[in-house]
Image (cartoon, rainbow, N blue to C red):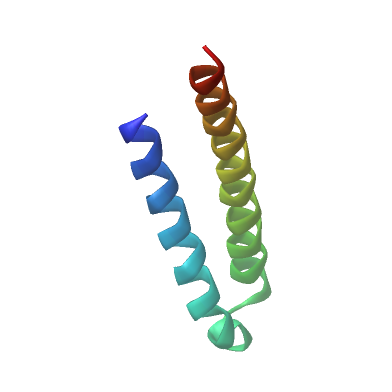
Length: 64
């Protein structure tokens, strides 16, 4: 489970960096903005999947 926590931490860091970049979106071309927003949504979805699987494994371990 330690590797999973590291992956989650990396995704949170990417998500935070995405928030810091948003004030500069007006300076970027529309294609780049669309790509960045798509990547933020993609990594957000990956974060949710990893979190749900981790919680499921923790619940399984605690109920055993």
